Figure 1 (cartoon, rainbow, N blue to C red):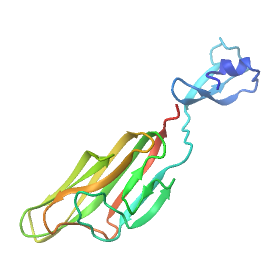
Figure 2: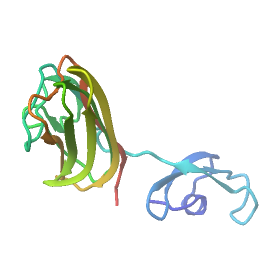
Figure 3: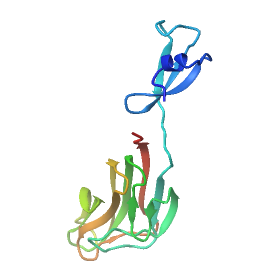
Figure 4: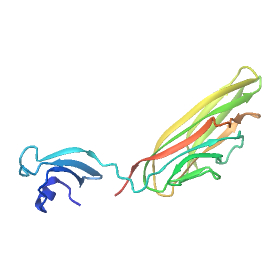
Length: 193
């Protein structure tokens, strides 16, 4: 693959315009002005990076029913979107189909139901290791709902698995269903080299 306008010029390109060339690590877009010579100012103008993805990957799943199991991946009931089929609802696990940078968001509503102090902790896991956590608690009236959110951007290799799980919580606490709990993710940038 050519790495510059000069490479294109040497193989006979003569029509000025936008071209994709191989940069040091990524495909880049450049404008080549073939009315000029390679050493002339303005012969090549760098435009930016080309967002190349061999296959789009993004998902959005939800909980329809309340959930209160700790120590296992949270399974989801509703699939709103699963382009690339990388998210498995039943297992609750996302498996990276490509090496690259991914973004994930997990948000929900915790239902507390006691007069005393109650807590809820959850975590984002990669291949069995907790990377990040989220927390909600209350010390107020008997029934209370608390929202939470966890966002993360991660480099993943092909086959890496990501999931959410409740790490610990007070007795009686539940992760509310009724479509208040969402997990979504997408491939931001695919590593091609």
